[in-house]
Length: 112
Image (cartoon, rainbow, N blue to C red):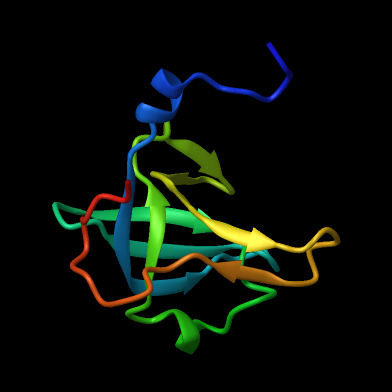
C-alpha cells in the first residue's frame, strides 16, 4: 500500500460535525492558541486551536466551523482539548482559513 493511503473503513471512523463557536478565551503564555467553547449540537466542547495569529476573537464568535468530534482528548498547556477544528493552510502557513459550511445549518450536523 502507498504511504499515507487509508482504507475507506478508516475514513468512516472519523466523525466530522458542524460546530458553532460560542466563546473564545486567551490562554496565558500562548501566542498561538485560543481556548474555544464550541456547540456540537449535543454538548459544549473545549477545543484548543492554534489560530490566534490568523483570527481575532471577534471574527470567531458564533462562527460555524467543521470539527473532528471523536478524536482522543489531548492536553495543551494544561487544558484538555476535546476535538480538532479543520482548516486549510498554504505551504508556509502564512495563511490559515477555517473550514465552514457554505450555507447555514444547525450545530451538530454530520459532515459526509
